Amino acid sequence: MRSIDLTMAVVVGGLFATGVHLMLQRSLTRILLGFILLGHGTNLLLLTTGGADPLPQAMALTAIVITFGVTTFLLALAYRSWRLSGHDEVRDDIEDRRIGDVRERADIEPTADTGDEDDEDDEGWDDFAGRGRAAPGGRRGEDAG
Amino acid sequence: MTWLIALPVMLPILAAGVSLGLSRHGRAQRLLTVLVLTGVFVDAVLLLVAVDRDGRAEVAFGGWAPTLGITLVADLLSALFLSVSALVALAVLIFAIGQGTPDRAGTGIVPFHPAYLLLVAGIALAFLSGDLFNLFVAFEVMLASSYVLITLNAGATRVRAGMTYTMTSLMSSLLFLTAIALIYAATGTVNLGELAERTAELDAGVRSALGAFLLVVFAIKAAVVPLHFWLPDGYPTAPAPITAVFAALLTKVGVYAMLRTQTQLFPRDDTWWLVAAAAVLTMLVGILGAIAQDDINRLLSFALVSHIGFMLMGIALFDAEGFTGTILYIIHHIVVQAGLFLVTGLVVARTGTAALHRLESHDPREPGPVPGVQGNEGTPPVVTALFLLPALSMAGIPPFSGFIAKFALLRAAVADGGAAAWLMSAAALVTSLLTLYAMIRVWRAVSAPVIAPAGRPSLTLVATAGIVLVGLAIAAGAGPLADLSERAAHDLLAR
Image: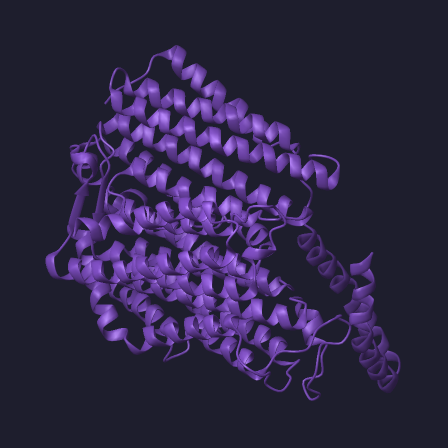
């Protein structure tokens, strides 16, 4: 088993920490920089754990080539995102938010329903059926907006 | 034998290069991809027969010694998964050609076919890798082509989803590389065969740490709860055939890597309870997530996450019966999940919506299109029938393939008899029941806007029917298949 000296451990740890911190940001440029730093950290770790052994060096070389290719792809993707939306921040997931809205609406509605049924049974049912028919229309309006 | 092992990787990579050159000749490009994937499938089946007859086979590339050079290893497990994957990849490709997904790219060159071929090459390489670093390269080949496929001709939504997907995958890849560096530092090798011997000599603490590290890496790739967030976010936005091939194959490669490394490199007592806890969590969280969804593709994505838990269950049980169950489950799930996504693709193509509330708003007593969606014509009855078969199989209704795989897992759990095994069985039963509910809900919605059968069957319909038939064939050939899986499982334990 091979161990690495303190300087290298601190450098690798620092690269990992900075890389992860940057990857957690919302701006794609920062995420990209974080990914590059994290890649450097990994390659450095691969080299220092191997010492003079040529095999980890070959692995690091392969890893560098792969990281390089992926970085190019990410740059293109960030550029496309900027062209499409005018900024490079990662947006929220729309479908997630929509499901959250449904939950909130469901939390409010039951009390209204029981209120109707308590007052007048027949009208309550009509109202219920009417609302059932109206629901898709209401949704459609929201989708468009 | 050497050629049989090398071809599934070499052929698609070479063809991808040729395919790029053919980008102006759509017909030749399509023909090339279909021929190559057919070749890979035939090769994989021949390899399966050969490995079953002669046992495990190994190829050292360039004559380098196994520790220094690249080795490809084929055993029953890899040949079995390779055959199923090649078949599903071929069916999905035919669907994609029928739907015209590859031709809709707005750019001058059409990257769909080369990327698809590289994806298959990466998957084949992952199944055949004999060392950890080569496995990393295989994952990168596979993921790099998947990044291209998921963002192909993308609008704002897909760029957003593609970014999440890409970043999560990259994070797991870098963690994988870190794990390889640490494992190499601890043992001095990355060859799986040698690692199996050397990890046994390691200090128990170091070994557990390395095992847990690899587990996290593959758990991200296999979308195991709580590392699953990227999947229901990224997959549903892509076109139907791309979602289908990702859902069917990419996560299963992650589970395969987990199965391979956790069984061959690390003994049971190190990490099995982590896997067991993840199995229970994955099953329950996944299916509850599926029930909350309104979009069919997202519902299926959550169901996919949930059923990864079943595969973990067999790994956590850690005996020949458990592994047999996991192997059967992976085979069943590759076919069924691809089928479900393809049928959904058919439904969306016909009705113009994947939203359950819209489909459900249609009155089932009045056949016709969905109200309020422009340019839709309703689904023909054959499509709803095609959805029902894999849906029932997914929920584990006999006599479909899902029942056979679930039965194998539950039997293994009962034979184990431990508290964790009973807990996992309970979670599995609850999940199956909830899966049935979710599937029937989708089926009701899908079968509401029915129209009379439309004229001649399209290529997309034929491909979907083909994959559903393969699912039925798995159920019909359950006996021999279970035999094969059992032998593969014993190989895993024998190292």
